[in-house]
Length: 263
Image 1 (tube, rainbow, N blue to C red):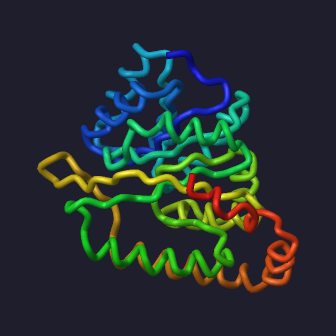
Image 2 (image 1 turned 90 degrees about the vertical axis):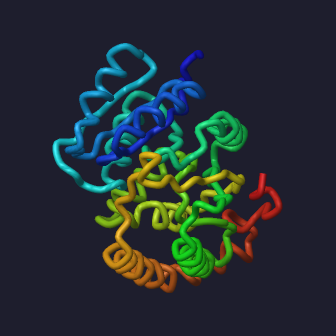
């Protein structure tokens, strides 16, 4: 597979267990290059990832000395990728939940609309915890309000293609979105900048512990983080409301071509 000069797969990884090796191999089967940012893992997977990269020129492994959070790991990879001329990054989790077989389809959509962010809309199966499925509806409702209905179908699903330059600008502009709050805050703030969302369905699978599934989500801690995040975003929304209403009246992104979001 010829490596892309503009689009790469970026996988932040923190104590994912052995499942990460299957995830990385699956991603490499569908795209080149693939970058893994090891976010201070202590589970022994770092050495195995480095060994994979030693035999595969299409795989790059970056290692952060301590855990700083998903958003911080993504930002590290984005900045390094931009320095090498990459313009877009598809992010996916390291735990095997995301559909590597759809990487090519999402990248193709991004190549057709490089001004857009290509967002996965999760299709859940019976493995999905009901509490988390219902909980994300609340977050999505807030996101819809904070963007005046810009068309973000799911704010939490991390399988998506970002344009690198505006995302770096967003993250450098404020100190948050470095941990579990990254996925939602990224799409809201990009929508405020006029980056159009394109939604594509993607199956998600929640793996049991017996299947090698690892979850770092903590209901109390992370729901508190999401609550604080939406409080910040609502304040930002209210401050931007006149400008957002003007964009809507003028028919400018993210309010134009609404039928094209669901490509």
